[in-house]
Amino acid sequence: MTEPWVSVDDVAEHLGVVRESVYRWIESKGLPAQKIGKLWKLKLSEVDAWVRAGGARAENDGGSDK
Image (cartoon, rainbow, N blue to C red; front, side, top):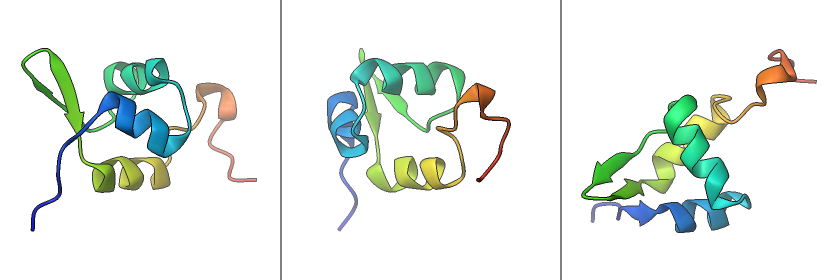
């Protein structure tokens, strides 16, 4: 079975953030997403991999893993 596409709201709930953060990460940090019509759709497995790779790290974090 293939993984379903989910909405920005679903991703925000999954990560425990507000939806505006998800939109900002799509536009400026390369969060993997596809625009289908007027809606952004994402796969949770890709979102999780992006987070684990440090994609959601704060820009002023300096890359520290401490």
